[in-house]
Length: 49
Image 1 (cartoon, helix red, strand yellow):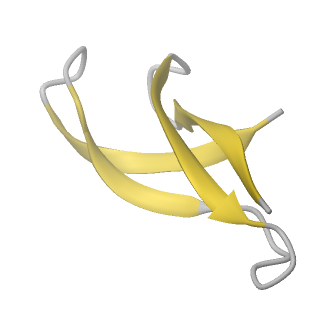
Image 2 (cartoon, rainbow, N blue to C red):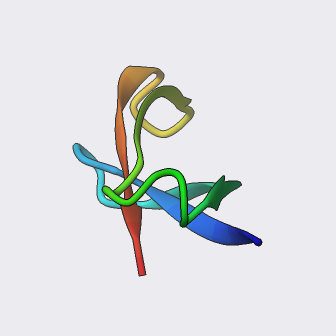
């Protein structure tokens, strides 16, 4: 039931991470604060299609 999602940095717009989420339990899009190696700091990463 878990699906693979891609996380995109909100500042540099690069797709840095992949992760999984359960679509039945978590209906809204995933947002995590992760390290962006291109900006060299922690930024907000949002789920994209």
